[in-house]
Image (cartoon, rainbow, N blue to C red; front, side, top):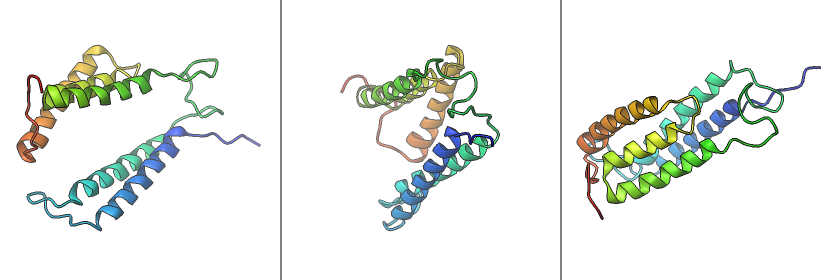
Length: 160
């Protein structure tokens, strides 16, 4: 009998999808409003739907992954069972950088930092790829959050 393989991406995607569905379900209990006149439930509903769709895509993409018996993909992680902390450190560091730069630097530096530092958590990304992804996300953030949604966070700010 062949041992069952544990696919982290499949279960992680399913968990993200369930969390998103629950968040969206709770959000419809609030006044949602319209994109022009958003109510308190609009943002949680949008995030819940995005989480559910992202979770579904992650779970579907995991179907084709070949996993080892311990659940890791071949060639990933370290050999003696020690976890690879680079990704975790980069994610936590990027969130802290976003918070700091959002307060003291504005939307563009904060967006650049969160994307660039997070992208460095993936060992397959080069500095150039992380830079280009960060620049693209800065442009998207300016269009979506500053121009379309008119978020009250300045593009650039010098100091507090």
